[in-house]
Image 1 (tube, rainbow, N blue to C red):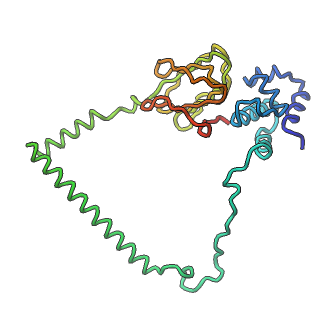
Image 2: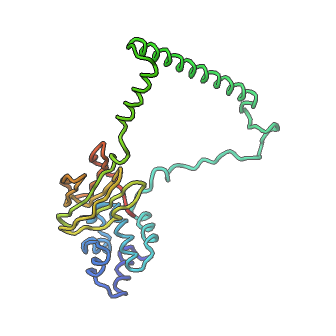
Image 3: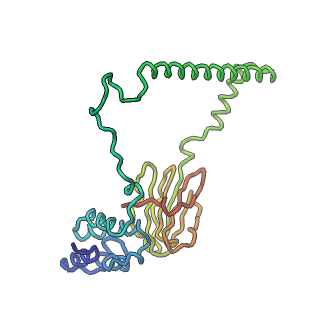
Length: 263
């Protein structure tokens, strides 16, 4: 089977397409396209971007992107620990099973029913004690302050209504402006891809996006974030960098294994 880079290069040459044409079509820098054709994985920002660029490049050439991704995973990614765990065969049904409808050594149905009743009684007893203790404490507090339980209830409702934040106040507004070419993958609420993995050019600005929570992956630090209208520079980095952004927590730096992908 041809190598991944050879497959990409041959398809491009057969179609008589120059690298610059693919660059304009996919918004992937030419040096990254050449790195894919030469299988120089170390020149790419990281495994996440290798797979994203590889799939985009393959589909631009009319190739099966999924097949090339699978070949990359098999040839260049380490298998996960879960894949290396031995498969333990489960107990075979219908073989050596004693009469009575239960497995050897297992508790009887009667025993399990008794245990269930005992557990239920214990839970009910605990709930009753907690409710009784809570009611006594509430009544004593109300009497000590000279206020009736009804007045305390109304005050509690007013306090809850005042302290509760409206859902709209949790919305974050986010936009980006690139100072140099930079790859961006922006994920909003419910996994929606606001920016589905593309390269912003120098001086390019995005629309303003709104969500309760954003997760973003940047290929480098050549970008300024505008969070709720405030300019927030990105920490200097030549490698991929990611953030989680919410109204309550602000920006939180993500570890390399937590970076969102748009593949």
